Length: 250
Image (tube, rainbow, N blue to C red):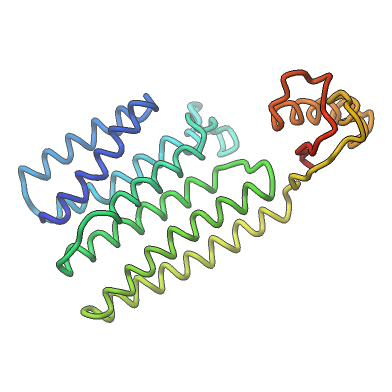
């Protein structure tokens, strides 16, 4: 019970800290602070385990598409996430890292921490599926970030095999299965994404001329390309793109 309590306390502290920057998380932090207080009073492992399970899912829900308000509306009518899913996945991975960093000695501590860490990473992966990746490079980066987190949890799960072979093996296999599924899912998305490339103009040109050279005169392609060149390269003067490597999305 003490191990679960320290884990929940760490997770709740992370969500409270995030709520300072993301007001939408305030109700989540408040609800789970109340749940934590109740679990502490009851001082039973099942109550604390409920909080361990609920908090990652509740945090993740803020960063998912919201249900449609109209009765009978289909999934396509759902509203976009309140906050960018990138922020949600980042927060959940930070919470997982906080739990992984907790000091552990007894088997019960190590088991609870690893299980909680995996639950948080799994929720982060679920939230990541809502990210509209801009490029192959961005998708690669998120895939590698999540895989690195899972690999670390897998190493800690393997350490448990010294004293609990069957549970540790089951958890390790689940983590490896998740790593393969994550890689397959994001690799499929990567194949449909444009790539960030470097283009070096022969001389100083405008963003408009550079975009026109890359995608032609069609307004539906030209205008977004101009906007992306300016934003991606943080150009102060769109009319003056220097003869240096410029990032473009193609």
